[in-house]
Structure formats: C-alpha cells, structure tokens
Amino acid sequence: MTDAATLLKEHRDSIDRLDAILVYTLAERFRQTQAVGKLKARYDLPPSDPAREAEQIARLEKMAIEADLDPVFARKFLSFVIDEVIRHHKKHKE
Image (cartoon, rainbow, N blue to C red):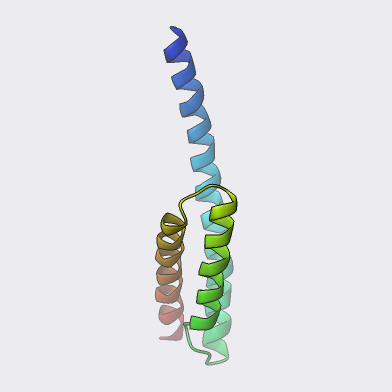
C-alpha cells in the first residue's frame, strides 16, 4: 500500500468505529426515551416538554462549541432527535 492508501485506510477504520459508537449510543438513548414516553403516557403527561428541549439544545450547543463542532449542526441534529422522540411519545399516548 502507498502511504496515502495506508493513511486513508486508517482514517476510514477510525470513522467506521466512530459510526458504530454513534449507532449504539443512539440506540441506548432511544431505549431511555422510550421508557420516558411510556412513563409520560402512564401518568398522562404531555409528550413534549418545550422548556426541557430548549435546555437540551442550549446544553448541546455549548458542548459543540467546546468540542469544536459546528453548533448549528449540533442544534439541527438534536432537533431531529427530539422530533423523533416526541413522535414516539405521541405513539405511546395513543
């Protein structure tokens, strides 16, 4: 292998490991939010908590800045996740 090919493979291997971490972390996060959705449905709580969601977005944006990640991207990503969680919570309520 050439130096470039070797370096490229190393970077791609690292990316593949990180992708696996992301997938398994998201799966665990959704297991937790599913439990929250069931709890909310059981106690007739609203599926959405706008104050909590705003806190989470602000917290993630701060972490993104600290991690040198684009905070706009972080906000979009968390907003997507929150929207999906709320959709699941609404299904539990039905």
